[in-house]
Length: 161
Image 1 (tube, rainbow, N blue to C red):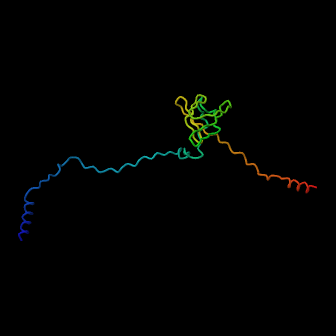
Image 2 (tube, helix red, strand yellow):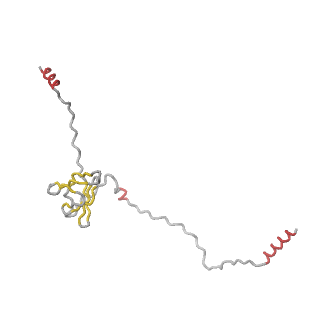
Image 3 (cartoon, helix red, strand yellow):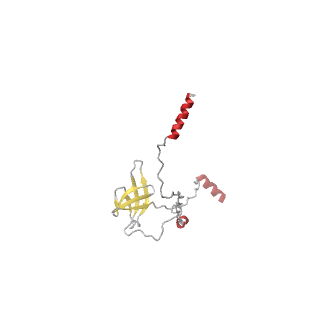
């Protein structure tokens, strides 16, 4: 009973004494409602979708001419790399001469700076130019004929008579 009396006295004191927490001051501003986030504007790129830049059949515009004094008249005929990392290439110049070039060497004022399996990269006055390896179709395979021997020639001459 003593515990019950203590609990009732504590509850009475809480109701009789004022609360220590202060309520916020009333404001003249109306509370705001949260706005829904705006959907991002998705641009429409119909030209890019019709002609994707990474399509296998996409080719550069043929009307674009290489700059004058460029390497448009040079043709890469072959590229060879050794297992120790050394590389060399055969390049046909505009006058028809064929030159062997290694990385670091100059050719017509252009310095060979990189050799890849399918292209050469040249540099001149800070401008870089990549020459692709000229790919020609392989000639048709020759038909295999069996070698002729003296015995088959003798049989053929006997059957002719």
